[in-house]
Image (cartoon, rainbow, N blue to C red):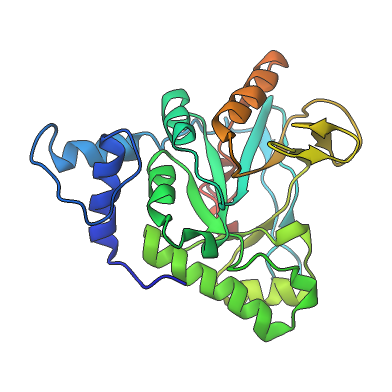
Length: 275
């Protein structure tokens, strides 16, 4: 796990990197040209303002009766929206950063923090393009194979790294492989996690999926195409920019649009919605 970096210093580096249309080179000497730091920061944060759902068009996920983080696999909504989530982080595509900023597409990153070693600045660029960094463990294990202490290290240590690097503590957890148990939920709560987000469909970008082939798309319910409120799983892989353009085309052809899942999850469960 990387050492802690002062949030303010990293923020400055991140903003300068995005302004240069690439990812930040932490520690590089900045030249006093172009817009002021305040103007650049304002532009960066402005990219993170996504459309919110209109009242009455969706049903917020509910808290679990046992008080532990609830498990969410789709959002109940009447809007033709889908939610794009990207896991892991072991491949880095600078074209993808620029594409997300150009298209202004909301995504949510579930970061495996071991992959930030030497490439943590890439995810600063993703954060500044509008993607929150949420928790996907330190080393990507099957959580059901670990005891309480092992699960606690994976979740809590990942949250600590993300907080130190990117200035915000994760509120949402995605277990690798979608595998978890009641111990996972208990430990996640102890680590400050408010909900567990799974998925309802997967785009096998850059790889082959069972029965759907290379760059295939599969629904968990066995159906075809998109449904309102789908949470789509993708991964950071080589060629992600082209793969992302592919799924955006499919989404738009079917009359859907990407939306920010955090705007459909209540603050009490780690999102940004009221309630």
